[in-house]
Image (cartoon, rainbow, N blue to C red; front, side):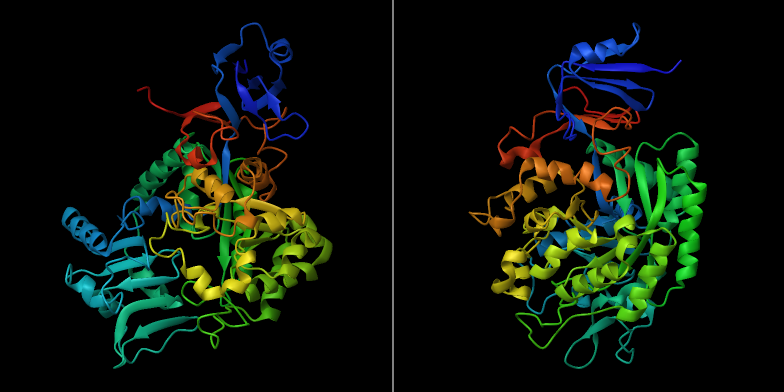
Length: 543
């Protein structure tokens, strides 16, 4: 007999425009059987249905993170966690403590250090600073946004990087005045170092993934959409699913680089699409990178940077090759995502999507990050049917990347500031918007991003009037972008993203109503319960 559960006496926010508020919901198996007034919902249930009293609590669809690197995030939980460091001294202290606690680690790996510590030594990041802490083992630190790396001398030695090593295509080995590598590597210059880091064993990866899945459930997530770098985890996730242990849904992608064999990538994702259960492991995405990031001058800005007018950044693809690859991927029925941050990259992505016409409208191609589109391109999202995928915790990232909050404006210039992370402008132009995190680049907690999208202001209320306040959106719009908007961005809106009859029973119960609390307090709201497919996968411990 199929289990029936009645959730009663609640304040349900359905994110369903036809029935936005309800007081009760009936779950039958893994689906919603009814939602609405108590009398109606009760009439749809059997006499022996279990009744759970929500005690007036706010309930809503579970969050969907539209952009993560989940395998990497699971590793981050077991690395030197640098995003939490607030000073340069703290970075070195964390390195020392971690190396002492893990004497068996042949490589010391960390992620998410900032560019703007108040006590950063003159001359900035240099291999010698790491060498002073640990010289006998390689140290490999990825920066915030992961488009640069900082390594010690031992790591350079093992990678064979010397003063005579040429810069790789699409990357730069930063050198001092004498030509000696400093230990600072941009973009693809650090790719070969990453290949030298020992791979996790299958059992270690499984344990890390399960730990990260539980963390996602704790934060109210029912689905994460992979933005790449998760290929190695797919067989392990499939095994976890087969064992009945998977409590988080995944949208899976694989990355195509200019030198990749597109046919091989399509075959790999086709295998996922054909062999895995799409409700939990949905293989559908081909991912491209067109540029880097603005902070390291690698975002593609053909007009030049405000602080370096002669530099235009990096464009990783020839337009004709990229257009052909996009068209082929969409012909095969895959959704295309493109990392495009700079103005030139966004324009290039939208040009490719527009060239595919009606097929693009069916496939819903996405622009990931979309930090500085032109006014013309803002208007094109709705016309083309492209989706703008934003990570709102990155908007004025004072809470995420210490000291970097003013760097964006330095790179782009004040004249373009009104189009910075233009969430509201794209919504007003009838474009589709989805929210995520890029975890582990920023905090996985959706409520942090929702607060930031609404206020565009750090936790310590900087800037006073908000950063580009004309791009603020409402709480309801932000909730939509993390639920139904994110589901639409993954072709899952018929099954997920709102509380409606027939949809999957993926929902959360919160300690407070984000639509009614002061926006500044949204990030403090607790997820009391997470239900995925009708099953409780997280419950806040009683205090």
